[in-house]
Length: 238
Image (tube, rainbow, N blue to C red; front, side):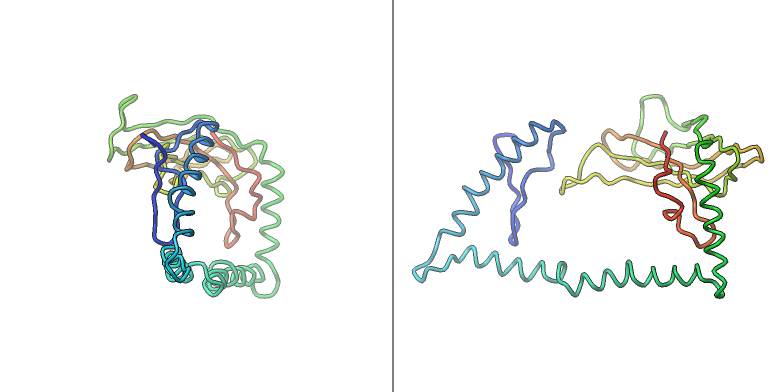
């Protein structure tokens, strides 16, 4: 916020802060507070207080109308119910039916057996090695492809019950202050009976700036079972 608080305005409201946010918590609090006060003094209060001869705050009313026109289609109760129906209710019904199977609930029984096995032996899961290929040390360019190989030890657990992913986090934020993480699933190259497996994948660099890279392993659902139902608390990170 060079030269003072920077306020981005939209007809249907105001935005506090700026994409150039700092990572220092105390400094960020100060910048946000300055932004709020500047916004109130220069925009909100004058807009509400400036009235025509009939006592109507024209600028304020105009902003209210724009808010109603632009936001109601996105935040209305009807839109919310449609999202619940599409994203939650209908998939839940289909999922429940898949667990029931032909009426014997055999898929559910298989899932419970797999979950108990995973939970009992999860302490055996460990990263043993990671290799990054396809780049020069310390040098990355947009468009570069990084080849990743991850070795796992998981005595007592077959590799098909594991889900290994690479998570790439950009340090920069978008215009709304968010950081969008990128998820790259790895595929098993080989698995052996003694509980060791090699996982491979690739990442194509598409963004500028600093990035952090992490690798995680979590239980994978069997058949129609969702991986989240295996137990979300079992994720391990490298």
